[in-house]
Length: 254
Image 1 (cartoon, rainbow, N blue to C red):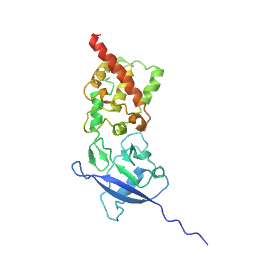
Image 2 (image 1 turned 135 degrees about the horizontal axis):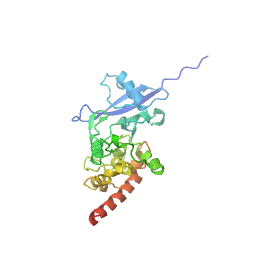
Image 3 (image 1 turned 60 degrees about the vertical axis):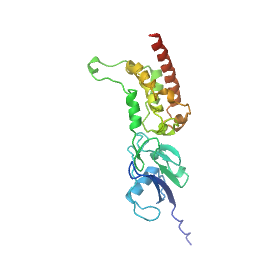
Image 4 (image 1 turned 90 degrees about the vertical axis):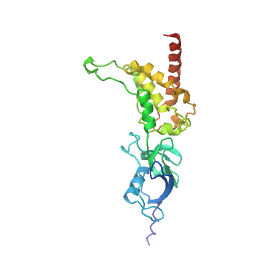
């Protein structure tokens, strides 16, 4: 006699939602059929295809952001079971149920799990986190970076502006203007570049203003949360040293 088929396994989600930036947040529960290899993004896609909550009521599909689905773009950052992380890399099999999904609280909510990362992008603008090379094409190739320096600089270049480090940092919140660990690490990256170092003093000056590097409380949450394993605290320590040197040079008029 054949054994009875096992009851289908369900996955329970409790999702924090918000209809618009001004409205109050609320939670909504969903029960989804389990599939091997599911991640949080595939679960959100299932809710989008069939927006029925755990009560059996048809609801508005949950809004979220995603792009590459390979932990490269940084778009799908959210808080999952209390931890800021990438939803594409959050496998259902590795998560405790019910799975609680919330938007990152450091950034203003646009709708549901969609957030406004303007704070982070403005921080990168403030420290000029790029290498200005406009009009230099006719000058030929720029100077090469030493291989030893390139190896550790490559690790810093993995930043995907996901915002997870800002969410994990207790010093980045609505009551402070702390620039955050990501921008500080990018200053180290671009100041180490043979062409980018032309603007090194300008970047250090930006970090010496209000909301700059002095806002770091050395909690080291950022380096533990970073999905790319970027040595953020090492960068902060190095930039702390660079800004101190720059300050003394400025005092001495060097």
